[in-house]
Length: 168
View 1 (cartoon, rainbow, N blue to C red):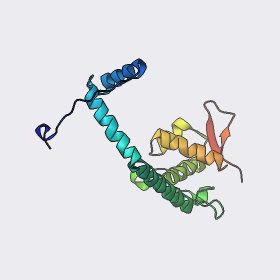
View 2: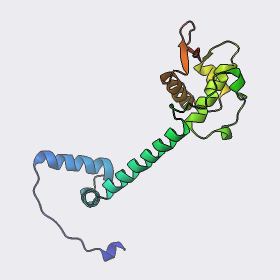
View 3: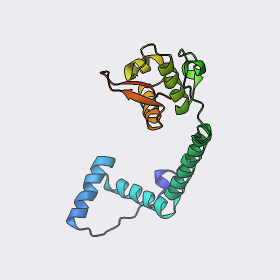
View 4: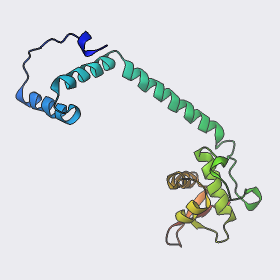
């Protein structure tokens, strides 16, 4: 559809000063001051909301998140025991590549393996970041998860904070 195919109509309406100023401010911010363009976009957005399209997308996203949660629950079921190493006999090499894991549980396993293998008995977050091939945020999340489930604990004797395997 080209601009020539669209018929435009001049609309006259009245707004309170405060709302008119807000309309102009938003048009300036989003559409270079083009109030007509801003109003057309706002109407289209409002139509989607009224027709439930946004709600449908939200419900779809909520369902996908729920499915991911179920998949995570199947991977690590605390009642059945998680397959995380707790001794040097259970460990895997700390040398890994990024392809060795694709989710947070695998990062947790690598963190715990590195702690089990540690000659010092505890490791700082910086040292874990060097040993585990993952993003620092992923490692921090894994450490917090392991702390919450009491697989590891903070070593309060060290500064910076270090982490170690909980005693059985």
